Length: 95
Image (cartoon, rainbow, N blue to C red; front, top):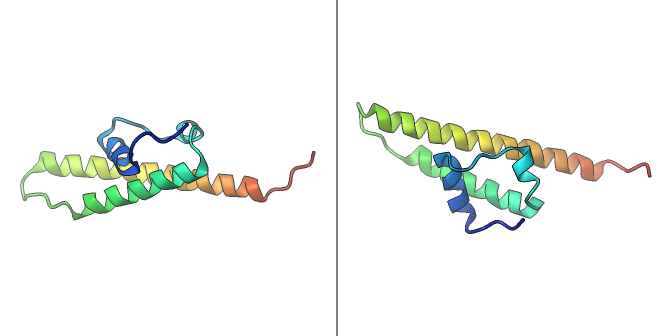
C-alpha cells in the first residue's frame, strides 16, 4: 500500500491520535515507506520538544505530553519492526 500524502502529515495524524501504528498496520507498507514514516515521526517529535508551554497551562502541557508519548511509542514500534525485517533478510531459508 502506498503512503498517501506526506510522511510529516501522517506523523502529525499519529501524534493527534487519528492513526495508530502497530506491526499489522506496518505490514501494509514497504520498508522504504516505513523508513519515511519514521523520519516524519522524528521531525514531529523534534517539533513537539521545541514547543513551549505557558506556565500554569496544564491542558496544553497534558496535550504536549500525550502527543509526545504517541510519537515515541510509534517510533519504538517502527524500530522493532525494522530490526525484525533485517533479521529475516539475513536468515538463510531452508527450502
